[in-house]
Image 1 (cartoon, rainbow, N blue to C red):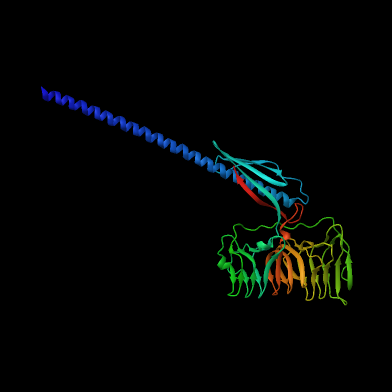
Image 2 (image 1 turned 135 degrees about the vertical axis):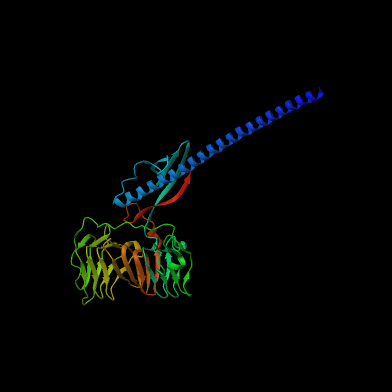
Length: 400
């Protein structure tokens, strides 16, 4: 009798234990399901946040690109772009942006959204210039003893010598060259392969690969031109302020030497040469005090010995030489102290300078032929919005 009762009690206790274990396992299973669900929800929300952030950045990039394109197209700035929107490819994220004027600066506000997540980013744009020192697509060749530095209000930051090239030894700095600034090779390159230096070469700043490829807009043919007068006669010719056009321009050697003086005026004197501009021996083009000169070259600028450009203004912005996309070569000879700036993205630029050159260079390649001094005039880095080489630069960025 007692044995039967004990067996019944054991079976009852076992049932209770099994039931308890089942309840615990059920609770644990429900907890795991809830935990997995919560983790899934958190993961989805994290993905939505990341997608919203990426969409906001995409909107900012598109607005920035549209602002740059509008600035390049317009000779007279008409104001910011209209608001825009779009979707992030391969996602369900979207963005919208607007550009407004705040305290004299344009501000981009871009908001990205995905599901329940939203992210807003801001960028303040300032107006800068494509002249930043020396910028080329391929080769830089600095001869023996050349010095590179900077002058002007931001001279303490030094100059930058940049190339888009990733080819071996495309940037060569011969013995005793001194660079008081930074040297950058193309994005994704190995700087030690591209930048060739000698034991006595000194680069005061850093040598590194650029983070982005430099892009330079093409130069447009100037407008409102008239046929240019004859400036090939011997002696002194003073060219009044105006906007002149030549199919080609060859100023030969004369006796006495040819001196073309650019007179002051209400605006810059513009000389557009559709073909080749050639300066014979002893020819000098001189920018008088208070004058400004802009030369646009269609195919090439060739200078003979003893020729040169001189500038009586201590301002590189008062003598500008532009090369159109069809311009492939600029041979520039300068005087002992020359203030000039050259922008010819498709041209090989040779600078013969045994004195001091103050300005900036943009070209396909650049070769410093003599052991002179090159100073980047930092005033060229600033521009007004209607300048030919104005560009927008992101000066501040933040997110909400």
